[in-house]
Image 1 (cartoon, helix red, strand yellow):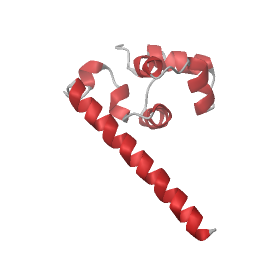
Image 2 (cartoon, rainbow, N blue to C red):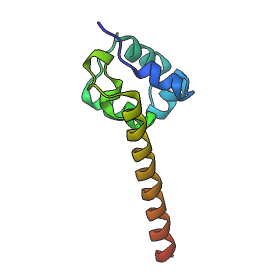
Image 3 (cartoon, helix red, strand yellow):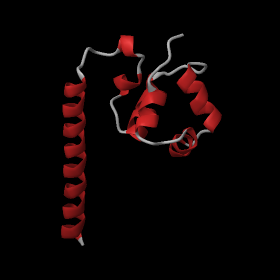
Length: 100
């Protein structure tokens, strides 16, 4: 079985298997099994892991299964995602402030 990209993304973000496991409420061994393909990566897992790693679910797939996106396009997508996250957080703060 072809390895997915969980490990690569996790390491790029400086997150250990133990830290990711804690975020997801599972054991470090479960993360290791997911990364090596010993445990299946279904849609539920993809959604949970992508939220924890702040990436798109398809980014977790093996490289040959991913859409053909250049590194530059990937950076643009990450920047847009980050901007949306910041905007969402600011909206939550202003709503909470007005309500209080």
